[in-house]
Length: 348
Ligand SMILES: [Mn+2]
Image 1 (cartoon, rainbow, N blue to C red):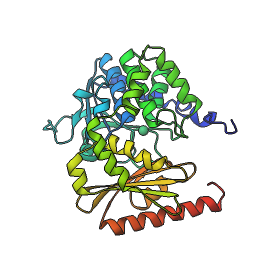
Image 2: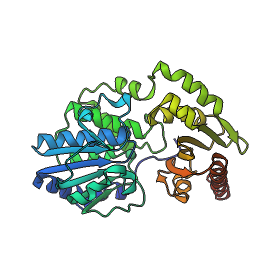
Image 3: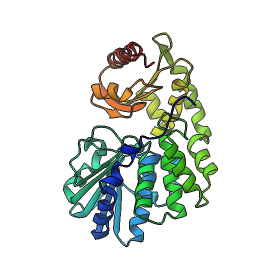
């Protein structure tokens, strides 16, 4: 192998060196009530990490409420405790003041969605995340963009603080680790990722079932939706950009969740020669949820940031409004600029 995927030691040790994990554990030990929330449209990483943390806190005798905005994808319903998570729109006593609020898998208030209000209802906020450029004000900011998932960070925290990781906790954490690396396929996968997976497997979790459920199994009802998605794929810029578009009518007709959309997007992203794939979903008339995926050094987080979105280098998202033609024109122009930047600096 030509590239060393080992996480640079100095940075990976930051959390331990400045005692962040110990401070977090101390803060949680002293708390009576803890709220956990995550980014909108939660995925395997945010749901799995939250579930594992909730199980730890319950075993410590804490009151724990987990809040999310969106839906739990069907293929993640096996994670222990997700059925107790509180979706946006739930009639909930909003006078409760929590001792601690933990914001997972995002570092911006807006990405929390409807439960942003929790920020004003906690004595202390802990941000526990692996995205770039944190903007949330927190009592404790625990962030490591070199970790592929919050699941890895949660494992690191729990082992550092000698928390016993039970089988259901390991199942939740493995889901998180596997989810954000696309089943150990994305370039964010490090030797540490495999170390965490290996340690979690020692609790006898069934990794084949977890990975099959998350990456292979599908609802046969989705086949006609997939056929329409595949028909929509267009290749631009000499095959370097793939665009997929689901209009409002199709969204209404198929009602697929975001995990399914991400799976469908892979067909565009994985076409040979494609550097960037753009998946537009018209959630409401002229309002597009845009998912960007890329290979190598093409930075889609930067592209999303231009339009007010964010994410990771190879996976990012943004919401844009306007007519489809204008939205797609702006996006493609911006992607082409990034492709030129990469070829200029020889990163392509
Ligand atoms: Mn994540």
